[in-house]
Figure 1 (tube, rainbow, N blue to C red):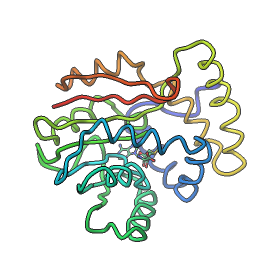
Figure 2: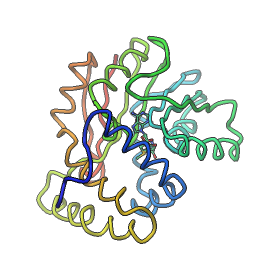
Figure 3: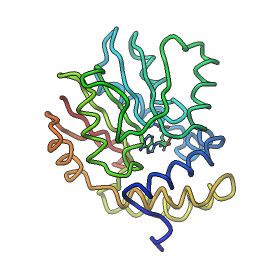
Length: 239
Ligand SMILES: C[S@@+](CC[C@H](N)C(=O)[O-])C[C@H]1O[C@@H](n2cnc3c(N)ncnc32)[C@H](O)[C@@H]1O
């Protein structure tokens, strides 16, 4: 597959990603649930469990998009969520959903950059990011910011697509991601966004390299857990 249409690191990647999400925001939720056959709800719930949230905690959900990871976390305990994203249009949809669910007291959104978080050191009890870390310009810059804003003892949970390691699922996955998904998405939304998806997953570090990045930013007890034959993984650590 031609890999030349997208930039996979740095500031140029950031502006490309930001305008892409601004463009597809209106169709994002539908496509998300449709193309994942609804399994994303289960994946999100597993990520929330990893955070071991307790009543009174404040969670930062980075790259919150239309807010689904935050909504999942709000079901787990009596917590507050701050959702951060740099796409104005994704956040407008998150705000609408927060209002519809009457969650304005517990879920606030902020426009900002994952690599330069507008929060003081040691501000949050927990931090989540779902399908966002693959999209940032410089992964280590974002992880360093996550570490900075977490309180000591705070947990990070990172949900991200990964390439299945088994031969059979590996091939099935690549066929779906490279051929079926961009065609389906092309009919309903923006083909380029769903060509970017498999390409960006391929450019994402493998499991052990990504865990090494988390450790090098200072996180302890770093581990990963594969979900659904390894098409998604949860990476976690503690400050
Ligand atoms: C695939 S969506 C995931 C949204 C949501 N977390 C979910 O699970 O549905 C990726 C989101 O990351 C956001 N994003 C990417 N890079 C970012 C950055 N550097 N700072 C803030 N948000 C970013 C995009 O705007 C987009 O809303």
